[in-house]
Image (cartoon, rainbow, N blue to C red; front, top):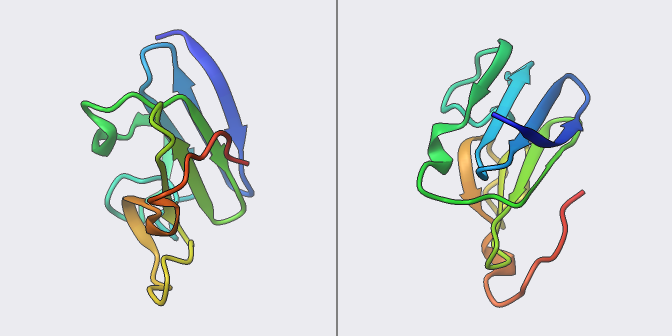
Length: 107
């Protein structure tokens, strides 16, 4: 796979490939890797929750990751505020606060 973007967080990283797939590795304790568990990954692992979707941008933060789809939808995992739901997100979850907005970048 040809990698077109990489983002480094505090203790984890994400990569975006030319086909729109997202890969992550590093510390996963807060769910920021998006693999459905809190396990660390020593090597890049494809985030299967994005199967069938094309992602156009990724960003890794201290304890979270973000992905952007072509329609302007943003999804987050790890320690993000989804309204009153402050729990760690182990799988990508659409950020509902942006439902009526077109997101053009993530950081």
